[in-house]
Length: 292
Image 1 (spheres, helix red, strand yellow):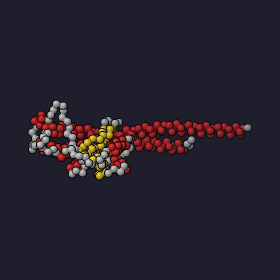
Image 2 (image 1 turned 90 degrees about the vertical axis):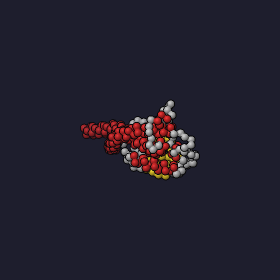
Image 3 (image 1 turned 180 degrees about the horizontal axis):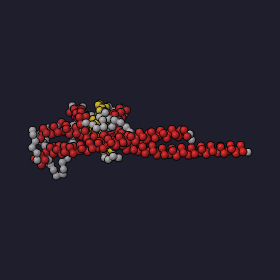
Image 4 (image 1 turned 120 degrees about the horizontal axis):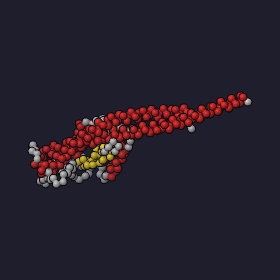
């Protein structure tokens, strides 16, 4: 059994740990709201952009006109994966779930996979797994800028247009709620135009707008922007997921530390009581011996 001095030190150590985890919980909670707001604010623009691209793509289906290079599907010889993870830990099982999902997906592919890692945790995972990491982007901060996403998307689009990779997927945590972040892997390139609403073939959309210089050139300008927005939205989802997961993990750690402190304090009080009782018995026994 631990001595009273050891119990006292363990209680103080656990109390110090609880103070640290509680501070991290408060910081994550303050950042979480802003990160969630940024992720939600990007959705209206992204949804409207999907609607415009879906309408233009549906209205310009012409077998004689060559499709935009970002829309062309070709034989897959090399696959690219944009893997987005946090830079830091202390966020529960978020990083492990993301890396496990991406690692399983890579292992199931029959073609070589090149990884573009956004975040230290994903980069370190694939380096340890001996998967080819062609580029890495780290330290984007708690509130990533759209310019960061633009540079990442530009790198991926250039490799795709030059034929270095034939298909690109994106892996990131989808923010569902404060307690739920779901790993998602979906195709990024070639672009699969979003579907129009049922019963709408796109002609009505094209007739409602006047395009200058032409619908084809407008679509050509919007497609790279669409890829950038997909990447930026995934990065914002990652930031919101990290702050939420860290807040929940630190709250659980603080609660566990407080519970351990209560148990250790009870053990300490019992040990102290036993020591006092033993000392009293020794005093009483000594007094009785002197009287005899």
